[in-house]
Image (cartoon, rainbow, N blue to C red):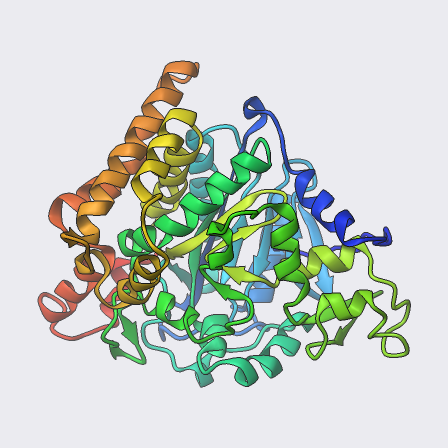
Length: 457
């Protein structure tokens, strides 16, 4: 998310909040694809994280991108923290440890998504390489300690940094040392949203396994395939996880709002000032708890939109649905993640088949998948087989979904081409972390710095 919202429309009732989510409903012909991907900037010579300031820092890269693209500059206390494409709808932002993120524009098909990603990476290289800066696609920093990573000058991150150690032991690692690929997708109705949320949550561990790409920490193997996914299990239980209530009878927009209302807030923004309100839930805010603590203590839609952007379940609901389970990875994976979920969720027949696949999974089975996948990824046991078996079924459904989309489109290139990295991985029974570990124990001879040379964009 590039900037925090400032919509001052007052909130009258809880029903108003559910209505804001319902505004996301749109006809299928208006469904779009929004892809987000993060990457770690590093000094090409020292293989160290780039600072914020300086000739080879995040600030310089952002300013170079500003000159190249002509996008609007986003600042926090006078410091550039992002760029917004007000015409196309995309944005560039920085995560707490300097992870460089493209929040892609809402696009019609996967070919546009892949062109957008490739163009962005080309632009980043054009600006960064003369500075001696490269970018790495992986789920977690492989060699840098948390203490080595610079902090970005973004006010909300200061509040989060202070709060995280109070609610979990790995939240700061999440903020400063992890990287992801996400896709944002649309829904046509409340019923469609419910079906997609349930399928997305059930299958999120399968996606995590397919994209697992964070087996190194502090310069050595960490015992996990996706340590990034493991980090999320000990970050902040109030706002993370598989939110089991989604599978309960009666789930809908109002039930999601009801959950979000009781999650502690991070901040309230008034003007350019961020106020730490981590001891207050949004429900308490609506009942006047911040009177006298912040200027204009009446909750607004801007406050609400900022709040729901600080909730981190495996699948997040806004006016669209965010799939949040994948590690960052090589450029082909940037296109594969949206291809997987578009194939599963954007054809009604395949959506029904995906629901048939997961509808009898118990809460205990879903929880076991979520806890098992970070360590063993595709080899995680499930029923009479493994996650690999489920992943092959899921991939087949995604391929069918894209095949049906292509029959209806004017495009001359089959969108299924973007699933190729997943086909290759599942055919070999390996996730990206398996390949990294194989190379670490083989041709790299334990030299983990090779990852910067072989996996940089």
